[in-house]
Amino acid sequence: MTNKMQAAVVEAFGKPLAIVELDIPSPGAGQILVKTEACGVCHTDLHAAHGDWPLKPTPPFTPGHEGIGLVTEIGAGVTSVKVGDRVGVPWLYSACGHCEFCLSAQEPVCGEAEFGGYTKNGGFAEYIIADPDYVAHIPDGLSAIDAAPIICAGITTYKGIKETAAKPGQWIAISGCGGLGHLAIQYAKAMGLKVCAVDIDDSKLEHAKTNGADVVVNAKTEGDKTAEVVKQLTDGGAHGVLITAPSLPAFEQGVSMTRKHGTCVLVGLPPGEFPTPLFDVVANCITVRGSFVGNRKDMAEALAFAAEGKVKADIELQPLTAINDIFNRLEKGEVAARVVIDFSK
Ligand code: NAD
Ligand code: ZN
Ligand code: ZN
Image (cartoon, rainbow, N blue to C red; front, side):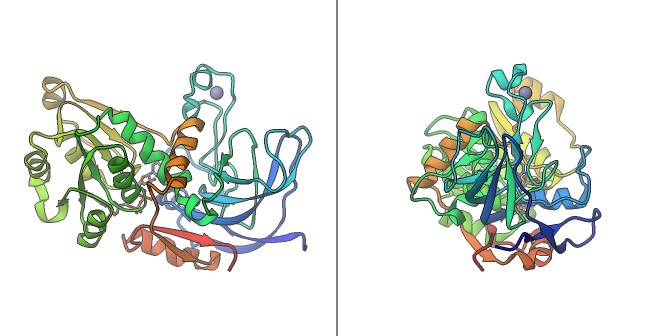
C-alpha cells in the first residue's frame, strides 16, 4: 500500500474541484480510518462547493457525505466498531453528546456538530477519517453502492416524511423528484401514503411514476396554478408536503398546497428566502417546519428499509475523476436520480 490517496478537493468556491494526491490520514485516538468503496453525490455537495450558505466550509476541503467503506484502522480507545466493519460517514459527522439536543436525540442541531464533507473532509477521497460513534452501520446484504444514497438522501426524506405526521392512507406531496425525491416517493409508498409528485421536468415525473407516485404534476407547465392543481388531485390539499427542490418558488407553492391542519416540511436548501402567505398559514392552521437529516436511530431505520428491499436508489456509477462533469449535470438538472462514485474503478 502506498501512503497516498486520490481526492477531489474544493480549493476555492465556484471553481472546478481539483483531483489531487493527498497523504492517507491516520486515525487519532477515538477515530477510525475508512477505505471508501462508494460515495453518492448530493446536491448539498454543490452548495458546499459554491459556498452557498451562511455557514461556510473552509477551502481546501473534500466534499462527500454519502461515503461507504470498510474500516481499515482504529485509533486508541475505539470499541464500537472493528476493522472490517462496513460503515457510512454521513453529514452528521459528530456531535457533542451532552447538550440538551444530543440528550433528546436531536443531535443534528447540536451546536458543536461537525458535518461530513463540509467542516470535516468527506467521501470524495479513497480514505476518510470518521468518528466511530456517529458512523452509519451498513446492514449485511446491502451493498456499499446501494447504501450510499441512503445515508443522506434516504435518511433525510424518511425523517422528513415522519416530520409531516401524515398517516397511512393520507396524501403526501413531494416537490422535487431528484436524488432525495425519488427515494422520498419510495419511502412514502412503503409507509402507506398516497403520493403526489411535483417536479419541473417530465422525465423526472415519468421516473416518479415508476417509483410509485399515484399522481404527478409538472410545476413548469402548471406555473401559478401548481398548488391549485395539487389541491384538486389530493381532494383539498396534501396532509403532508415535503419540499426537496433546490428552488425558491417550490417553497411558496409547497405551503400553498398543504391541507388545512397539515404540515409542510422544508428540506431543500437553496440560498435565500421565500414569501409566506401569512393569512393562509394562520387561518388554515398550517405547520411549516425545517428538517435536517435525522438522528442515528432514523439512520438505522432508513437503512433497514433499503436492506429489506422496500426502497432502492436508482444509481448511475461514475469514477471520482468525473466529479466536475457530475456537478455540471447536477446543477442543470440532468442527473436522472443519484450518481454514486465507484471507487472500485
Ligand atoms: P437533485 O438536484 O438531485 O434534485 C432536485 C430536483 O428538484 C430535480 O429533480 C429538479 O428537477 C427538481 N426541481 C427544481 N426546481 C423545482 C421546482 N421549482 N419545483 C419542483 N421541482 C423542482 O438534488 P438533491 O440531491 O435531491 O437535493 C435537493 C436539495 O435538498 C438540495 O438543496 C440539498 O442541499 C438539500 N438537502 C437537504 C438535506 C437536509 O437535511 N435538509 C439533506 C440533503 C439534501
Ligand atoms: Zn446530502
Ligand atoms: Zn450536542
